[in-house]
Image 1 (tube, one colour):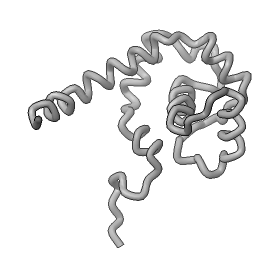
Image 2: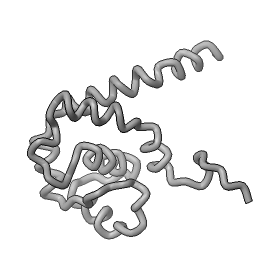
Image 3: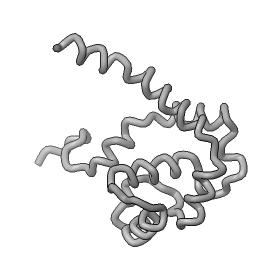
Image 4: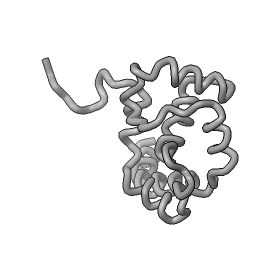
Length: 123
């Protein structure tokens, strides 16, 4: 059997998280000093949790925290160090600067920009 390390057989969320270089995330966190007051729920955990929420189609933080806590053993591939409760998610959404996520987005855009221009040339 082929032991490929590519995306075959991996959950979509894990494939997506593999495309997020730690350097881009840590640079944005340092620039905004974003993890300063957070002991356990770091920016990467917040980002991975919210991406999971988007892909799962959940409609509330309560639903998200229930799913994440219920599936704790089965979503270990998210590399989350801390599985948040609803209040933690709410506080992080309220208090954490959205600019750190904008910086992560623009860092990813710069890194993967060539892929969009290559696909435009194929049309």
